[in-house]
Length: 75
Length: 135
Image (cartoon, rainbow over all chains, first blue to last red; front, side, top):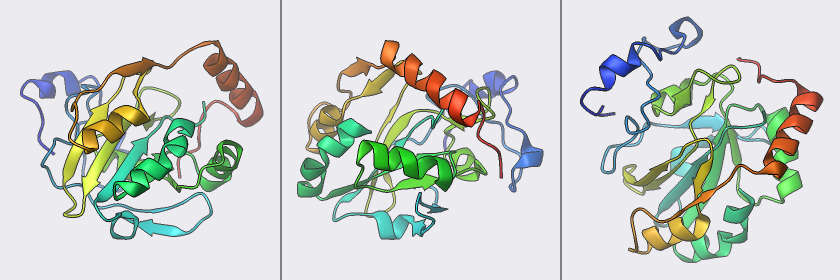
């Protein structure tokens, strides 16, 4: 994903714990603009749903596409 | 999410499916789905790997949670629209529907956090603990 210019400096204080993630380290910023940009390819997605069934992005897309709601979860 | 459920016929009529995603595991997500009567799936990302890949991971709260957002992905797997929110505001389902139909790309937000939200948060925390375990 593209980052807005200047986000790297802010990211230095907002880094996820890479040791807990099975992927190369990449700074994660709380800058809310440094997120998927319109026109960018969407990262792939394969996850279990709440019933335990595995869902893939391809399978979730409707005739025009998918509206995906990211929510904070229970807290 | 209940609001998106109420507008689900509109999304379907326009050719869009709906899904939700959080760090909660299936054991936490399914009761939410049942309580809200959601017909769309809730995806579970307890490892947080998908959130990191999408640059929507907030590592600072509750063991790491999603940045609240609504992302529309087209059939070519490209981001068609995206609305990234603060803790206290949400784009409305009607706003998303309108934007998908060619209306305002930045529809009005609704201030979300009220007394009911705090009461629900306290009840959930007492029932299940304050953090979702990382897998």
